[in-house]
Image (tube, rainbow, N blue to C red; front, side, top):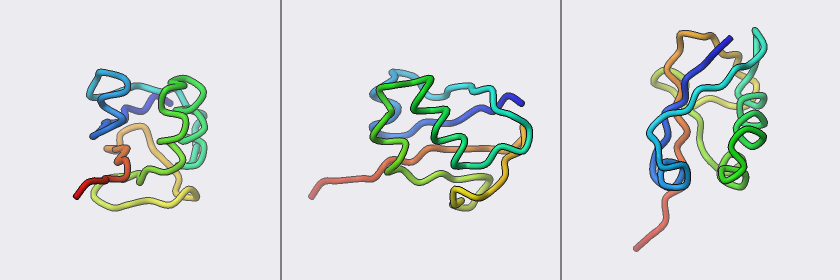
Length: 81
């Protein structure tokens, strides 16, 4: 299945784009998505593990299964003062 992932903050800046597409096996989980992001987009390596992933309107743990038509977002940690 092909999924589209919206990028925010540092992730968006690292890749200089708003979204990325990934091909994942049917029934893939958020954990599989994280691994695919690191493999296909090496600049996201450390952020992929530390970021929140939202599926639909809720944050999702690594065990959550994905579908091709879901809205997915990678939300890196925020820092600052």
